[in-house]
Picture 1: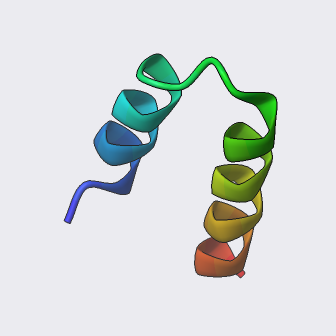
Picture 2: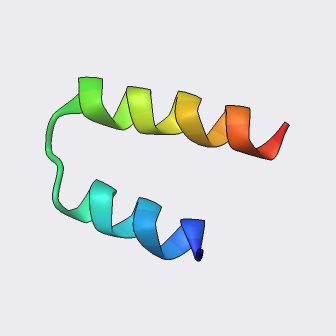
Length: 32
């Protein structure tokens, strides 16, 4: 699974900052 691609798509499809914040936190958890 390519998380970077998934994240980029989510960000590109999202103009909602709250969603971006959730995605960011989710990624941080994955990377820890």
